Image: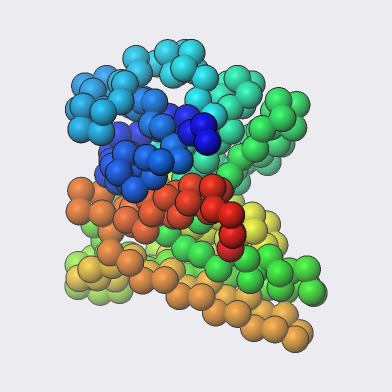
Length: 268
């Protein structure tokens, strides 16, 4: 059986976890071609560890004709490069789901995927339960909310804070509004809210609350769906990656789970 050919955009903590897992646990089904990073030296460092190429730019990456490009970088990267990857007839696996809160971008990417006969796979990231949420949405109209709780350090630097330091003594509710507005103000913290919204009622109708919790050692997300005949509550509590307090290690492993599912004869 021929192997699927992969490339990764992003050489940070999440990209590193994904690359190492592909090179070891998934090497029978997938070939890791190379790494693209905002800094070539970072791509070289990771590529040397896992035995693949370091790409200089997107054109260099697309010349290799990967079957899938895994995005583990940032919303800006997927906005800048996503359409070009699809136009190369290459499938995408996306972690920065927040970029798709922009309706124009969503439509453009959907059109590019259709026209080029490829697919965009949204990784579940740091949350999950989208199968049951989507099933419930088929049954009846429902309301959906998500509460995200993180430490002040995890939220530090968000545009919404305008440089303000969050309290390390008191809990603060720092946002209460739609998922669309949340991703604008906290672009690196609430991909989970946009993913939940896209799987259910949409980014304008998914109520999103963000809380800063002093001394919190994990990132916690609680998703709730309420309908006339069904109630769903999903809580995920996971520790952030050591070198990136805004991201959960679970996000990287959601990509590995997706890759495993794609080649399994029995899927979930």
